[in-house]
Image (cartoon, rainbow, N blue to C red; front, side, top):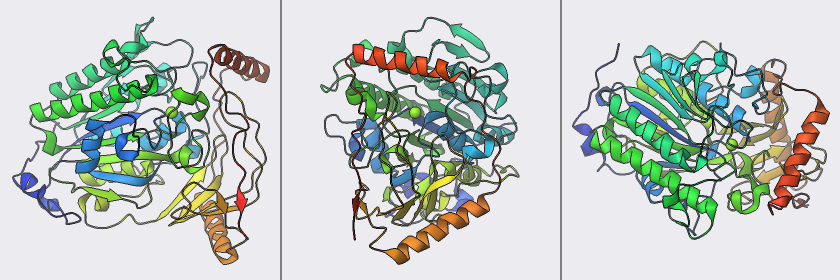
Length: 483
Ligand code: MG
């Protein structure tokens, strides 16, 4: 049963309301707003002009930022793809479901079916639901989007650099030999079609682009468009896609009845050099828990309901599950959630209930870094050797950063502020103690022969070197200890 939508005259009035003022009152807000998530792959914090890129201009994304809430301190649930997506769709840390890394085409596993997704709670409310693009939560039949609350699925079921690139529709492979230069165009056409078919609403569209994850492709129309290389061209094509979505909402007369969220799954893949994007002044990128790895661009736009605001509160992609539930009246599952409702920020009525965020290192089941307000603590870590996938990282003892004064995480204040250090360590330990048991990690590789993995990686390194891609192994800076 679809619910009727309640477009109100207050929407247009509210756009003129002063910043920070509460917008449309609860009783007059649309009962069942459409929800669109536009989720980029590996787009860095600073790859759009509204977040600092100066070589190209992302006009459409900037429009959403200027006319919606632009978050400066939004954290992805993880520093890599699969767990980040599991966290977004469920509001739960992926370690709670055994997801500690990424799935591969060889994986036999997927996100457990008992996990409840945003699509599932909205379907209960009569929403039409569509997943377009990268799924990456298991590509075997039983783990596909249509078993997790989506009516429809079209896209590449995992990352675009993995073996066996195909387009799937529903449970079937629709195309075996795909031309990735057309991927953004194809996804955009599918998204526009879904919106048009469901403009009487309500609907939930999860548009998860495979770009700008390597290998980067653009359609002919966008080749050379940025004047700054293929990566910039792909960002501009993604920006064009955002513009197409917005234009469709306007044409269908549903812009004021639709929440649009634009974000990325994790930080830039810096080892890819010019194909890897940028985290700006933030330290490091994808697969690390430095800010560049997990702090992502995140914009929420809802004409007439969300007043323009740049917001620097600590928020997370885990927050969308409870937030969407509040905005739509959908019922949350009876499980432990890790996100907080941020609808008070969106509606200008209050704050998130916490200014804290817990980080889980890729491949581990425990909290390893913790942020509270401006402060961040990191537990000691051994050295890791770099490879094609990530930079080598120096061993370190406890680290303490003040992110408002040192967003680049250069200066370790552990010795300088022993009281703050003790306070932050106590917060992390308390969080860890209260987190609860986590299940064993799922086996992400179908083939657990480590020699096989090493051969795959070695082959990838050789291919990268042959293609002229230089690795950033060993480039990561040591920390400056402040006494
Ligand atoms: Mg990614």
